[in-house]
Picture 1 (cartoon, rainbow, N blue to C red):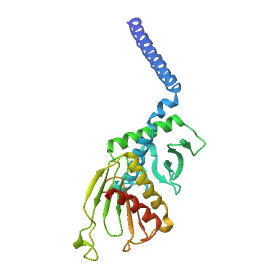
Picture 2 (picture 1 turned 180 degrees about the vertical axis):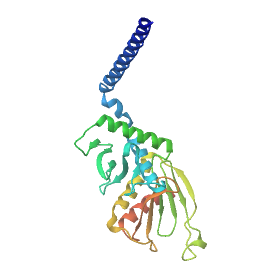
Picture 3 (picture 1 turned 120 degrees about the vertical axis):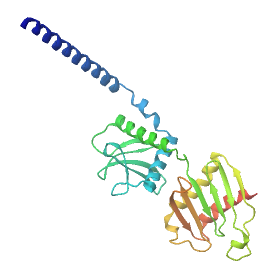
Picture 4 (picture 1 turned 30 degrees about the vertical axis):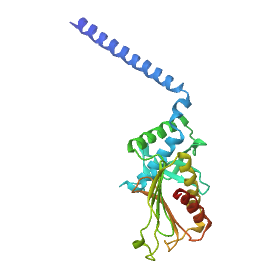
Length: 255
């Protein structure tokens, strides 16, 4: 009886030992495979379009999320907090923080930039791709929507596919005599959208000329991630060159 029991225990132990070694071998193979992956294979998600989606997603979450960090950053996995930063020179980057310390940032030109002594580019790529997946799930427009209100309260709505003009009616004008003309909507190319966007962004970045209030005759720019969420706006002085340049370009579409 003891011999039979001993044999059974030995067989069970042998089976468990074999299973354990098989598991460890499989784990080692997976680890070696991951270690040998070409980092560029994981970097495919960092395209200009995906960066735009991720950048807009963060801006959208900062405006709509019920729970943000104490410094108004977007909460993310593994304890990370996210911010979408646009510098005065127009350069934009997505920054991954932990407890207000920068861990790494992402932009299209410089790709993954570490801000600590621990550099793990492949892992950073994985985090960014996770962010892109979240952004795609939110299904936000890839490019900004703009509204420009000129000094007479005519409204221009511009996206990456069309430009729409909504003129003020005579009865709604401040003089009771002015009419903005006929409304229209025209399709535009991405290149034409980019040309209009460049002027609008130039004016948005020039904070030294911005007015505190919307005075009569001024120009108003709204930069939006959706039709209801504005992420930037400014008021331009009535006779400033920035305002004139924008309105000269837009008025060409009336022809």
